[in-house]
Image 1 (cartoon, rainbow, N blue to C red):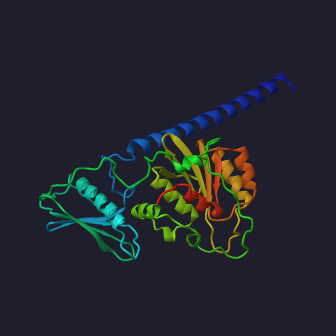
Image 2 (cartoon, one colour):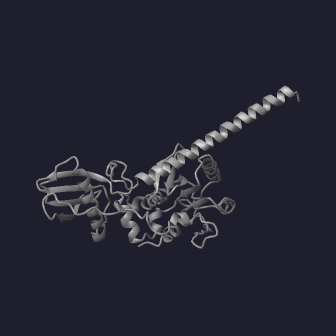
Image 3 (tube, rainbow, N blue to C red):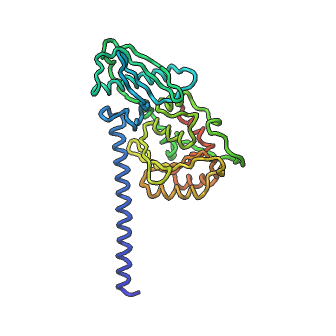
Length: 317
């Protein structure tokens, strides 16, 4: 090969490598910035905590002052049976809503906070008489409903290497040939998690596998941002970023996770610059995922037969 051609080839290869590493560094910086932003604003009272992006707060439907009452309505699904603990959580959230709103709305004449919730049918769940008109109780140290300050993050355990806390999973031995039943019919959800999910506006009875695990991530203090790939997210917490791909089961689908979906997830994770990768599906997992998890310890698959153990590992409720 002519020396000139060799030089041109080397220049082109060098240029491609330079751009590849520059692009990867940019994505890593973006992921780190996402993590820092989530950590800095996750519980900040200066942001609009009760706007459309509620983070770890109950989603606010409406706020009105009617006479001497401050009426706070949350878009939170309720069980038919009353839940005193859930009602108390919503009352605590309502007090913070009023505290936040007092900067723009007069509440000097408010004597009582009345809390409403429900999705299909809104009902009153709690009310609190103020010690004096416009006088609110002291603010709580930890605002919002989440488990972000627990001693051990159950999600991190799924990526721990050589740690007794690491969670290991199997796969289904027999995959049904017929349509799969709703996932909720196969799950046992601890009451503590059920309350937490409802307080954040998620109805466990109507969540598929991917939606369920995403909601749990929010509950445990992760900031979730949608990514360019359809059904993919970046979860950040404590400086760690986790790329998440989802594959939701629909009636008529083959009930087992397909190899092409797995390969696509691995490629997307590789280009995401995230620290860890997780694929969530309410389909069953093939044996192939064992080999992948063994060779790539920062990749995990949460499949239908693993979701219950994933829930049990949280040891809540």
